[in-house]
Each structure stands twice: as C-alpha cells, then as structure tokens.
Image 1 (cartoon, helix red, strand yellow):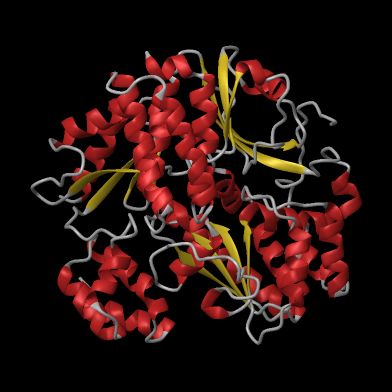
Image 2 (cartoon, one colour):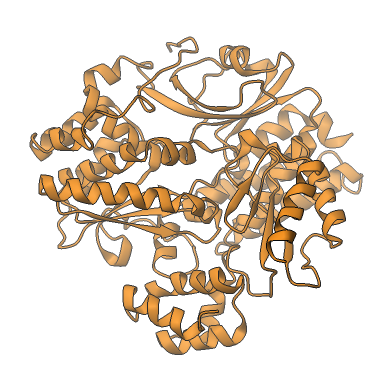
Length: 387
Length: 156
C-alpha cells in the first residue's frame, strides 16, 4: 500500500483555456470510443462518494440505445461537511458544463439537467449566464445538447441518483429498487447518466491534460487528485485539491489545530477516525470519501457529535423502508437512554448490532451507511457515550 | 401577487400537463408567497389530474415546500455539526431575542419565520443561515441584529 505526502494539486481550479469550451471542441475531434477510453484509462472514480469507475459508467451508457438520453449533473450536495460542489459551480462552472457536454458527445445524449439543491438557488442567475455561453458554442461545434437547471426542494436523500430522478418526476424523493439502473431506465424511463459535479469537472480536465498525465497523481489504489472540503477545528478551512493517498496523520499535521482528537472522513455517512488510528489510516481507503473531512479537537464531546449526526439521519430518512426509518430513530433514542442511565452500558452493543442490521437491510445508501459513523464513534469513544 | 392559476398555467406551458410539472409549480407558489395552502394543493391536483393527497404527499416530503403559513422572510439556521461547534446556539438565541419568537414560529406581523435547516454547504464559513435564498455567514449576535434590522427597514 503506497502513500503520498499532503500535496496540493492545481488541476480542477486551473485557469480556463483561452477559447471558451476549447476542451469540448478538441474532444469532439476524437472518435467517441477514444474519448471514453481516455476517461477509463485515467482511472477516474465518481466523486460523489460511492466511487464507481466513471469510464465504465460512460461506456455502459454509450452502449444503451434510446431516442432520448439524459445526462444529469448531481448538484444535490447535502452531505454535512461538504461544500466543494458549490465552489466548483461558483468558480469554474464552465468545466462542469464541459464535462457534461463531452459525455453527451461520447454517449449520444441530447438532454442535460443540472439538479441543483434548493440551498444553492442563489447560484442560478450566474449558472444561467454560463449556460447561454455554452449554448452559443455548442451550436457552433454542431453539438445538439441542451442543459436545463432543475431546482431541488430540500431533501438529503435526493442525492441518491434514483431518488433524484423520482424528485425530478414530481414524486416524493424515495429511492428505487436497483436494478434496473438509471443507465437503462432513468428519468421518464429513458437511459440516464447521473454523475457528481466534481466528476464532470474532473472528466473535462482528464480530456484536457490526458489520462497519462492525470494518472501520475495519486497512488496505484487511488488515481488522481480530489477536492476536500475541510471544516471544523482547523485554522485552514475551505476547499483544497489534494493528491490522493494521504495518511490521516499527514493530513492532520497539515490541517489540524495541533489538538486533533478525531477526523470524520466522508461526511456523516463516512467514518470517524480516532487519534490512535491516524498513523495507519489512509484518506479514502476503506473510508469512502466524497471529500468531506471534519476535524474535531479535544474540547469536543463526541456524544454531541454523534447526537447531531443521528438527529440528521432520523430527519432525512425518507421513511420508505423500515430498517432506516425506525433504525435511525431508535439509535438516537438509544444513545440518549444510555447517557441518562435508563439503559445499561451493554445496550450500546445492541445498538451497534442494530446499525449493522440496517447496513444489510436498508434500501439505499442512507440507511446502509449510518453504521459507519455510529460504530466508529461508539467503539472508539465509548466512555464519552456513557459519562 | 400573481394568481396561483397563473403560476400553474405558466409551469404547465413549460413542462406539459404532466406530473413532472408538480415540483416546479409548488416551488413557484412558494417563491410567490412562501407557503402552499390546502386550496392551492386542490387547485394543482385538478390542473394535473392527480389526487390532492398525492400533491400533499409530495409537498410535505420536501423541507423547502412549506405547507403552513410562513413570513415574508424565512430564516433557516444551519444546524449541522460544524455550525453548531462555531456558535449556532448563540446565533439562534440572538434571533429568538431579536424577533421575540421561538424556533419554528412566525412573527405576528408575518414578516419573519425562524426555522432550522440541515447542512447549507457553508461549513467553512459557519455559523450560517439562509434568509429566503440569500446566504449569511460568519454569524454572531451583533451581526444578527444588523441583518434583522436591515430586513425590517426594507419592508417598512
């Protein structure tokens, strides 16, 4: 297992090319399979958190026939601790749109949608201006691809791609059973490609610099660079583009305040890494990451942290499947009961069992991932749960 | 104020008389008057030829589609862990004192509603809140006072 020091990269926020949508124009001079091959070769994984290989997804999508194919940019960034997509849409929207357009060219899609969370509605005017510039250039390049903005309405679960599609269809944002995957049967039953904002922006940068250059970043397990949203007890909060494959200890050295007791990697759906594991854990390996890293110092009560997370999960569970709907509420009640002494300490083990059951039985990633933060906090900070 | 029927027709023109028009219609009405009442939902149901219960089921799923009356300015304070760590409680207290209402309530003059929201994506600039669609960051009690005064003067 190779590791990297904390290295800043400057790919995603590098200045625009001189002519607008030049990367799109150059990509359209290649054949469609060549473009997809470039993305596959780069080893790029989805940047939303699940980490599916982007090239493979595009290939499946390209091979699906349909008279109308949709490309959706998932800008429903709701994971607490994540704000990288907002920065991308504010500072380099052209790269995001380029990525969507390159995918549209390579996979023969004609319609695009940016699903923007309601909390980011104030970004719409600027995005619309950029879309006008895009329309002009798409016409010039002979690309038939129209992008619209669809505004979300405040639901974390709509970041899950099938819930997002349900929401666009005017339904409650409840995830669908998979398969069929959106690639075959998505928005209005049409083939639909859903990728995260950062995935599209990075795809356009892979096309600009070439897969061979992009691959030199990161380690053999994790290719390239990635945006990290850093918040909490850190003197350097903000969005940073870092080479993948860092040890947590190096990361904490760079971004911590000198008194770091735990790092939450991958948002509240991710894992809480305690100090004793800093040396051995690697950011993004075994602790899936959308890049949200929250840093807690020794003044913080991990009980309060976990209580906040569970309150969030209980509220945002869509309520469709029982393990998640009831499980999130019971976990919250459970830690309150242990804290107040109405339940014995051993009850925490029952709660961990419950969270593992939710992992197996919940329908979507929301219920499945609660156990990540729950188990890692309860096991590593047990005394804080009790006293 | 634009008529509800006008908003419905406008969205139907764009999206068709289809279910996909539902969320945009609800959002359009919320934008106009900050909440959707029962009559509005019946009207939408008739226009889209679906049941009113279906409209309510969808509307009530989403936290930005309010179905109880809200004030002209809806304040949503971020309650995520990082904003909490940076002093959300003080900000909330200052808002309650300033507006003389509790969390979840609306002022008598129907100008302000005070709500909480899950992560606003402003974790590096917390504590943060939204007032309607505008974001306010790095909040403290003094800043809260200034912001609320600004909005009070606006609506005079």
